[in-house]
Image 1 (cartoon, rainbow, N blue to C red):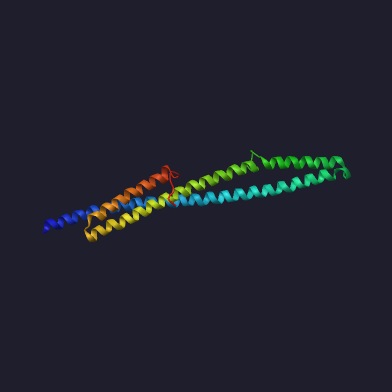
Image 2: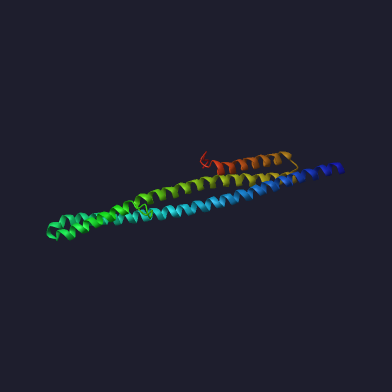
Length: 184
């Protein structure tokens, strides 16, 4: 009888080691997922702020354009020099608001920055989804491997190990090729 007991004890040690490795990768997957989620939220806020600033610039530019056109229409009744100088000043301001490479706050630059923030957000979200799927595989693998200890059914440990490999694959996809495929 002692031979059978030793085999079960050795098998349980292997299952415990499998559970430990799965838990290690689960912790790694959850850490990567939380980091990707935080990056996605930050990039989303940045993109929203940039688009709001872009809209403000557009509104201000439209108001100045309208004022310029109005002043040009009324110029015959007003001092020509003053109206002309004001129209030219507004035109320079509108041009600066359209593209301002020095500060990066022209509409053209804001558009590029906002699109870059959106791309970063989308990449982080793609990574996040793969990391979460990997974490789910690790969690289910831990449950199956734990059930092996209670039931003695070795197939559950193998299924848990297979899910662990699937989880590692999902972490790899999230890290190296997050846009390779989308499950959800």
